[in-house]
Length: 333
Length: 254
Image (tube, rainbow over the protein chains, first blue to last red):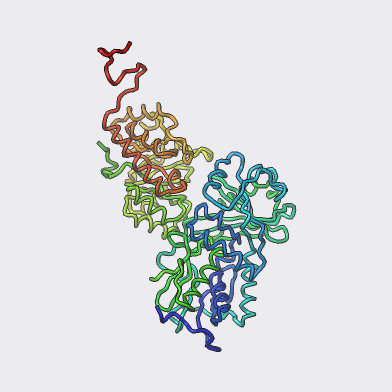
């Protein structure tokens, strides 16, 4: 694999071509640029936007909550994500809350047993006064959240400041010489990669004040609510084993809105700003990979952990390209 | 003696669902580790686009029993069954016609209607039903050759909610292969189902939502094996009178 290791600072010439300007490609470009490698970043749409699944993310940096079902690698690497994002964009270090309806208290006990990094609260009024009707909650103090669209814009700006722009071109790895990072998500068409459909809704509810993400545990319709600026909330997200890119289904919207209503009945009066549906690329264990195929590095499989895991994936791709170090997310094909 | 299912003899009485696992990798490890003989898979919510996931299921090399989970009418279930036959190339169908959104209990009328129609169309129907004997008889008349009575409502983990009803159902149709489907929460529930003389158990949530699905699947595999062995060994009948294991006559018991 030595041919993959590059020397840095070769002047005007690009050292690495990166295909795809979603969260994975942008994080890789910035991490490489910071390591002194000049990336040539191309994207068929010219930048991040509603064509890519990064656009529709919740933006929770919640490694401990994810640990209820995710592999340990997600918890380990995810804990460092907020540090990376803090160097790029505004990160709210306000923790996250997990609540359940009275009927589903057993779900909260189970979630508590299967996660770490939380404490149990019986009074929410100091943290989120508007949720004080929920008498029992888990507080994950060290979690954080960000606004994904703002984070993408800030990544583009940070790259611009490093002299890296996005070239609006369609490309495949075989069209370039030298090392290539393929960060095209589902469009890469990799074997072993499957699509997991997710659907979300964005609401404006100016009367509701939440300052941190809240997860509602429910046996059938789990929900998370992520606050954004100006009274805007993102409700997410379904998780279906499906490659259907069609718009949100009526059922999904009913479920998300009903769960939000159960969390706080004032959501019934909210203005629905938008809905979204897209496909998350995932490997069988739902852990992302840097897959090495000759001179091509495929950064893919971020599943529902795009913002949580893209910094780690970028760091491992950079470590491999600059020093030949193979981290735990690196696989040779 | 294990009854066969539409001519297929199963290696193990454990059937597992494929939904709600933390990841397909854990699903695969659970099913292989437990030696499950059949896997069920739902089509409805995936809307015909879940090919990558279905390929993973097919790759398990275990007979697939597609189901019509989430169908609230005979018509919806029949359409889903036809789609399932194309996708999985099998005539087997686990027929669920749900009658009530909260309890997810079967709609007996829709179930009967769909069973009749699908059996006539060449399907080998596994109807998800209650322990109701009258309904069971009608389903068999309609062409089902297997019954899947519930243990308890889907996902409830309550175990065998009506032992009397299940025992009489078993006794009423001694030659019909029957699978206890839904409501099992613990391996002891599965062992009990086998001890009552059922031929197999089908469960999903109890394994998929366990903290360690692979270990829980294995626990269920051992439990069904224990229950089947116990059934074959002709268990003693419970009695009210205590009976010492060793005779007391001749002993200095005063």
